[in-house]
Image 1 (cartoon, rainbow, N blue to C red):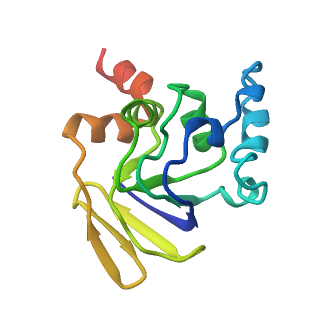
Image 2 (image 1 turned 90 degrees about the horizontal axis):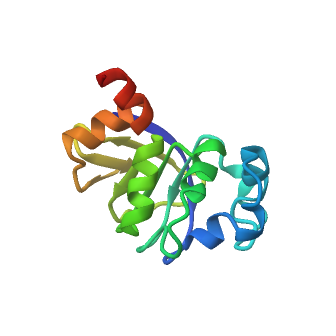
Length: 156
């Protein structure tokens, strides 16, 4: 699986409450989540997420285990999230909904083009190529299927 997008750069320890605040979780209206994603961090981020690769610091997705955080990013048009490490529950929630999460520390600038290839195991930003921690073949299949539900539908 491969993809690309423009970088939206964030710091370390971005918790799920910063991705989508709990006050918006009383609804299942994904468009409301999309409109308010990262609102408590920086209100200018949400409009820049369509076609974006989020490049973050360590421990992305820490905090509560809410799957709405991964869904909000996916629905906002995020192509992938790259960070040196993820909270394990966020990591699995993202894979389960078909959002690539890539464990890799990279250096890039805001809006810089970022390309990744999970099968070949790299991320490229500018003229630099970074090796990534590989995903299992099963996780790559789940992502290629568009998420866990689609994966199981295809395998039943």
